[in-house]
Length: 146
Length: 334
Figure 1 (cartoon, one colour):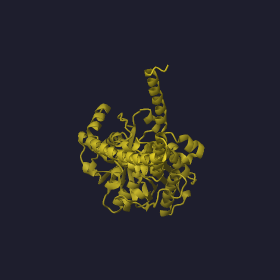
Figure 2 (tube, each protein chain N blue to C red; figure 1 turned 60 degrees about the vertical axis):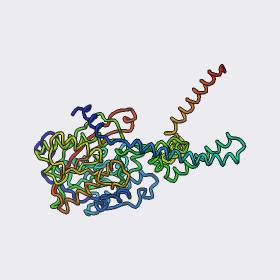
Figure 3 (tube, each protein chain N blue to C red; figure 1 turned 30 degrees about the vertical axis):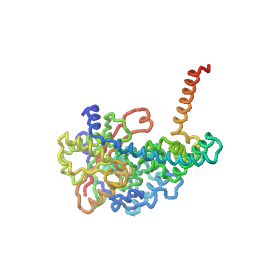
Figure 4 (cartoon, chains in turn brown, orange; figure 1 turned 120 degrees about the vertical axis):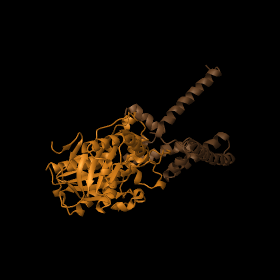
């Protein structure tokens, strides 16, 4: 059998991905995480003076939640069900950093944990900064700030 | 060349036997349907070690020790230690081998390592190069996961075609005796690459290798699958098993009811392990546990073990290359 023919055969017989089920779970889990975030924001708004401060506190709380749940070995179980619903919120970002830090701790504090902490989160930061720069550039051009 | 049969099969007329063996599995495998087939089930997979790499090494050493003590064999009486695992530079086997004075032959065939090591061990015995050879392979879920996939706690949604690396080790002492399961043939496989690139579906990638080795073995020995009471493949998993059946059916090979897959069988349905088990330990513990028990209890007389391996490297996968695969077969007779 030629490789191309076999590749076709594999495609025909690959189990279908449960897209609808995955999407519903992502919607539910992602929604749940955001609801927790909203509750945190509502409380923070009562304590903090400005909205910006309140949102910063909320982010810190959600990062803490993601980190602790990762350390307890719970977050990967949530993600197993929730998929992108658990990966996209900031708790998921906290999880990528924490899980890498936990994993590479054994190779040393500096060259293991610290160096490899962003091995998976790295691209998010790189493209976050890049897209932020581009959007700011577009805004500056539209407003004629140059 | 009298010990050759056809293009790829070798025969062992001197009847090297498995003198003793020992299988160790982790707690997860211990909850699977084959728990009773294994010699030892670990209460946890860390074993008070600082790293899972150290645990993997320790499990392999334990399996080797117990195999030797079961047969009252001293290390000095073993002329070769053939071992392998999944880690880079087969480091677990190398470290385990530092404990022993016997000459060490490190082998790598991914999840097929065990059959490769058994075949080579039997060949050394057949060639009069040794009177006793020790064979061992090990793998660990946590060490394999980090080397081939992602950090354990990362938010990854596993797919149904994903494999779960077996934590465990299997070791066997090969030599000459009046009784015990014999290794009668080995068919060493050629590398098969069908151009598949998805590391989340290694079963589909490995199935053509299993098919090629089975077909070649049957051609070399002029036998049908019916000649065996069981054909134990591993670790194709549920998806790979399906693809192998399709390939064999297309070829018109009879006796598919003899096929069983170690990777698909080692875990129960509710254990969330995707397609099933994999790793250098999987087919080792399924052969030395499940298949040997069948031979010993006379539920089977003749078993064909077809161990498959996806010879991928995380580096080449990241560079978008295909997954070369291999399958080695050995025949065990009661």
